[in-house]
Length: 154
Length: 154
DNA sequence: AGAGACTTTATAGTAGCTTCAAGGTCAAGC
DNA sequence: GCTTGACCTTGAAGCTACTATAAAGTCTCT
Ligand SMILES: [Zn+2]
Ligand SMILES: [Zn+2]
Ligand SMILES: [Zn+2]
Ligand SMILES: [Zn+2]
Image (cartoon, rainbow over all chains, first blue to last red; front, side):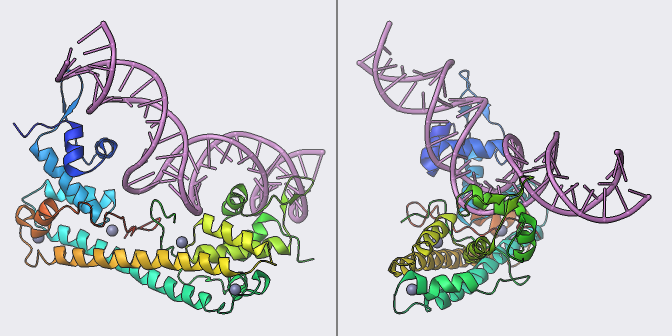
């Protein structure tokens, strides 16, 4: 009864756009579902759970590759779960590294900001001068921190 | 003498790919430079400084739009620099917000990780179960934190 | 039979590059 | 003079994880 869903049902229940569900199918995270006579996708409870799993992983900001990896482990229930731990630990490392980069960045930005306490003309602005002459981080930490979301307006 | 550069000179000196320089031109951050007879781009010291400015901004993870904004202010040297401060403060806000999201994320991930202290089979793994049944963050904080750089291997 | 809500596929756009392909320019070496 | 190789040119495609659009087919209700 409640275990046959169309794509829009899943989308509503799990608060994800239908296009995203099709995209996950295209990317092989969800397998190709059964179809109705009219060629509509039909999902069962197992597929709903699988999608829930994926969405939780995405909420934790894992890449689709990381999620693919976890799904593979999930599909082999007899295997030990050491590898699950490894994937998670690696991802925790990604987050930690990103936090470290952002803290560095925040320090640099605040230092730069402090160069203009008394706003004058932009020709003499310590910020613009700082940006022109800042030491170029040569080989040190060239990684990009990634600060702006999909939409970073405002 | 030292104030005429070809694109490769600039690229070597500032440690940036030539394609990126052309891309910045395409995006209007650098204006179209003079050309040699053979149609090669020729840059002067002012263009080198402008590119340096852009690269420093990128190293601070500003968007090209933010940089465009700062360049416009830099090109109007008589204006007050209050707007420069505003752009920088907004960007500092972007970084702060991202740090906040990532700290949240780190807490969630560590909580999840703690569900598997004694590795068993993946069928019974507390991590996989947690990912399947985790509370879905409905309306709360749906923003994506953005954890993985261009290449996040290893 | 027709309206409206749903579904299908395919395609393009997002940010900031990076990589590739196919060719043009230029200085040095034989 | 001719070739080699380093450099330059443009244009297009690929990357992540979607998001949005278009044009068409399906289903349900009245
Ligand atoms: Zn990760
Ligand atoms: Zn100032
Ligand atoms: Zn910003
Ligand atoms: Zn486990």
